[in-house]
Image (cartoon, rainbow, N blue to C red; front, side, top):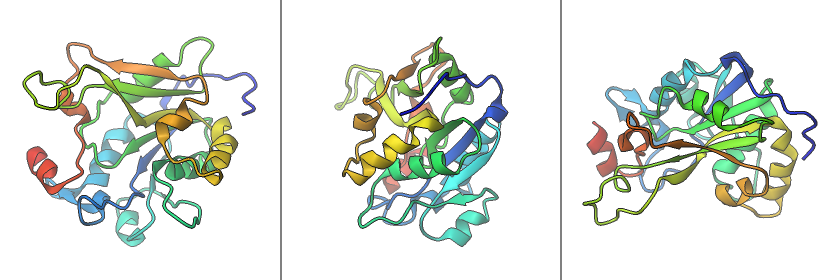
Length: 219
């Protein structure tokens, strides 16, 4: 990774926002980003949430491209690969396409992520800035002590990630070598974390939709 001197973003227009909707959505049983919530596709909700926090905005998708194009953002597809490469392939597509030095990725299946996500990730970068920052936050189960699946936290939410575009070549090599896990790749470089554990932060902010039951809880 050749970073030189990193300059943190000081304005929203210095960050490109990318909604990741390129996954297979197997547990949902259909194209997840197009599943309706309150009358609009999940990816639409993520785009609107991100729009006020960044400058350029795009959507990563690999199927049903006409439907995604109707949501009003440029579509950036994954590079051709012999097998699915997961969200890292979408991140790489964003790093290759973006014209800004910084890229902020969010998944399409978390429609209520915080409106200050970008601001707090930028703050977390530190001085001098690290080349990437991700999120630690509670999800509904993790934040509920009565839940059977409650765990101490907050826990890393690695697909919410602010990345410097100098990371592109390293990520490309990681994918070509068979790497797939987002957290494992992030650990290769200095990593900042924005911890969403303030009194105003709610576990539902990072509730994701993987199944019809989870969708019903947000409806």
